[in-house]
Image (cartoon, rainbow over all chains, first blue to last red; front, side, top):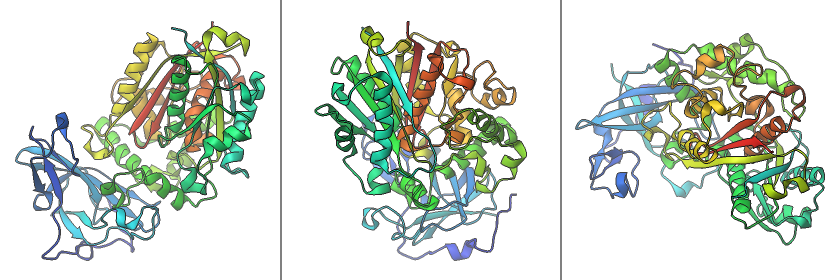
Length: 142
Length: 384
């Protein structure tokens, strides 16, 4: 296992803002069976979604990860990030997101944990009201 | 069909510059016109490649501003933004303008003013191209590079040092480019011991933040000799788009935009990858040189790193890549980079590259926007 923990790293428990009313990690299911995260108005073969899937109910596998130390305004430093792959009813679906720790490897299993604010919405260039700032980090599962 | 010729080219000093975007653009444009003996009011079209002058500097409407500054009125003008591939997209628009017959003389200027911003601010301006699902996690272009590099090294059993050797090679080439931001060699140890930026990538795996501009003058090949004794032609050009959301790509180590845009360019030119004598690739991050060299068909998938290890892509190798020093040492003023890539190929094909000169009749430039989100591949040949 790699070890990139520093004093400023968020811990697993501190990163989780789990509440009863946390929103889903919503992916869209398309007519051909494809599931995409995030949701697009049109998917494969220009088809509209026919349903949604809450990825927060599933575990995923780390496809790759990095620890970024040159972070933009309002973003934690270091910022551990991963691309992960879920399997929902046999269908692969990938997502990107922050990790709760830099102590991971390709192939590790992770689970989504809710965070009420992933970065400071007022510090970066993007208009605060143009998008949401909460979401799911990925936490390794023992 | 009359092919499109490039009959003039210029490039300003890249680096930390005093001038602001209007001055930088005018400098390259004025040099290019003067080199070809053309006045501004001879121009029929004028395109300006620029990603974010509004965000960086608070200056919008730059195409109109530069047209006025160069006395190019009443030429049709437009700003071309395709993020980091704005320069390549500008080449595409300029080529279209002449190939379609809409213009018989087109000037393209690409430029960006960035260094007055902190690294964090500049990184955020560039990261603003990402999807909201990426942006809220603090995903940046360098972090995409770290994610991809780790997967590439894992997938193809490539040594970490092979990435560092891209930086060493391109810095060595940059020593002979008087316009480059860094004209200084770096050794393997320096690269490997530089600070981590996006693990496993380190500081020297990344291009710098840069001010600068470059320009090209284009006309129908049938009248090229009115402007220049030596010229180059665009024999193939293709543009392609990949997913906005990077993680949705089936294979994180494949740049589909490179594959698709080059397929168009090769077909149009009637050429194959092994016909290319010299190439300028978008080495904003060292890993991108591997991904592009494979996507362009120069090397098999997962084998690009071996070519660097074996010296194939050195200036005296079988296929010199980034003789200019690449974005890595030359610098990366976003809107200028794609134009400056074509400038380097033009210099090589017209025998004007000085100490960087290689033997080349055919060259290729590949300009990447986002993290492979938009790609322009341009194939050029020496004019007859």
